[in-house]
Every structure is written in C-alpha cells, then in structure tokens.
Image (cartoon, rainbow, N blue to C red; front, side):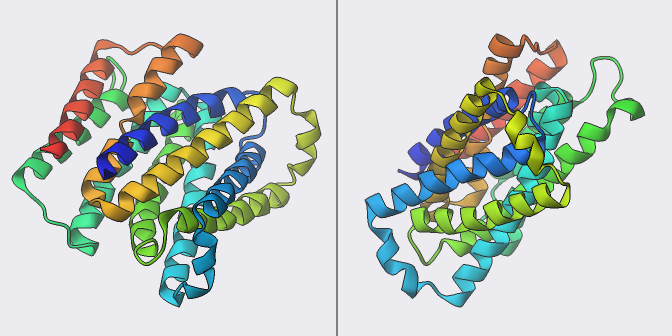
Amino acid sequence: MWIIFAFASALFAGLTSILAKCGIKNTDSNVATALRTIIVLIFSWIMVFISGSQNILTDISTKTLIFLILSGIATGASWLCYFKALQIGDVNKITPIDKSSTILTMIMAFILLEEKITLLKGISMILIGTGTYLMITKKENVIIEKKNNVWLIYALGSAIFASLTSILGKVGIEGIDSTLGTAIRTIVVLIMAWIVVFVTKKQHTIKDIDRNSWVFLVLSGIATGGSWLCYYRALQIGPASVVVPIDKLSILVTIAFSYIVFKEKLNKKSALGLLLIVIGTLSLLF
C-alpha cells in the first residue's frame, strides 16, 4: 500500500513544480511560497477533520512535536531555496539537483534510521547519482559558468534541506496519524515562510499578483497538499530509503510538462541521465 502512496506523491509533486513555475513567473518567489503554504495548510487540516485524527492532538508526545517542528523548518528552508532557484533558472536543471537529495536521504536512512543496506540499493544509488550528474552538466562543458550559477546554490540548498525534511519527518510521524503530522508541520512552514516575506519587505507585492498567477499558485498549493499527504503516509508505513527515491520520480512528470508548457528540451546527455535515475529508482522495488 505504501508503494501506491509513494507513486501518488510523485505525481502530485511533479504537477506542483510546473504549476508553481507558472505561478511565480511574475511573482516574488518568497511571497509565492508563503501564499501557497496557506492553501496547503487549509487542505491539510480539512483532511485531518475528515479523517477524525484531530481527536489525538492532546496525545502527541514532546519528542514527536519537536521532530515535526524541525521537519517543518527544514521544509520551509528547502521550499524557499527551491522556488528561488526555479524563478531564476531552468526547471530541467533545477529539478534534478533538488531530486539529488535522494542519495543523501538514503545515506541518512541507513545511518540514522538503521534501515538495511543491500547490494541492490548500493547499485541504485550509483545509478541515481550518475544520472543526476549527467542531467545537471552541460552538453560540452561540465563546469557551469560562474555568472549563471546563482540558481545552483539555491538548488543545492533545497536538496540538503529536503533530505533533512524526510528523515526528521519519518521520526516525527512514527507515533501519530500521518495526516495530522503533515498538518502540524505545515503550520511551522507557514510561519517560517511569512517571516521571510516580512523580513525581505515583500508583502506589498501581493497586490500586484495577476489573476493567472493566483490561479496557478492555488492549484500548486492543492497539488502540494496532495503530495505531502501521500508522501508522509508512505513514509510512515514504508522504508525511507525506498519511499524517497520513488517520490523523486516526480521528475518525469515535471520534465514532461516543462517540455509541453515551457518548450524546455533535454539533450542526449540529460536524457541518458534521466533514464539512469528511473532505472535506479525502479530497481529499489525488487
């Protein structure tokens, strides 16, 4: 059952990237993140009350609450980095770097969560890592020009914080319903996102957001909510070292839509990298 939730998470996450790219085209990335999080929060708590898990709020342990808060902070940091990178860079370059958090997360799962490492998982990590490298390097020059590498810094930050999010979230939802855990984490992300907006003094730009951007921001928020609910359900009942790579297959959805919507094409090296990532990820299911 967790495999189904993991693949559903990947589908929604892929849609999130494209919808968010459309939504932040003419909007400050920090403001867009904060607004999207409101939608995610509403969506998450609606699901909490539908499932009836609000009744166990008073039973949450201190340890669980601490890890959920830390996971929320890591998520907020990852989002802020990711959508800033998405605003100034090529989605086909940024997404693979963000998804490279898979390797770091798998290593953390082996070390911190004591999940079993096998030869197949080791080979899968090599394939995913190689594929990611091929996708983020240029066709003829593997060194990205310095003048264009600002987005790269944000994308790397997104990957690191995303890894921490998964591990902290796995620990945080062990003792409670995953839907409630997701909703609590979202509160932390929302607070963090709006603090950044006010610190950067970008709150006044909200009034300048056009109708189309609002539509895409709302839709991306709903897609994110769906992805989170599926992801943390899968993470709760499945191994993090397998759930996380499956979730990162959202790259297939993202790249397909980026080709259709933004006309962003993959060169042969990037296509080979994508193939290696998919093979490496699917091999984890065996």
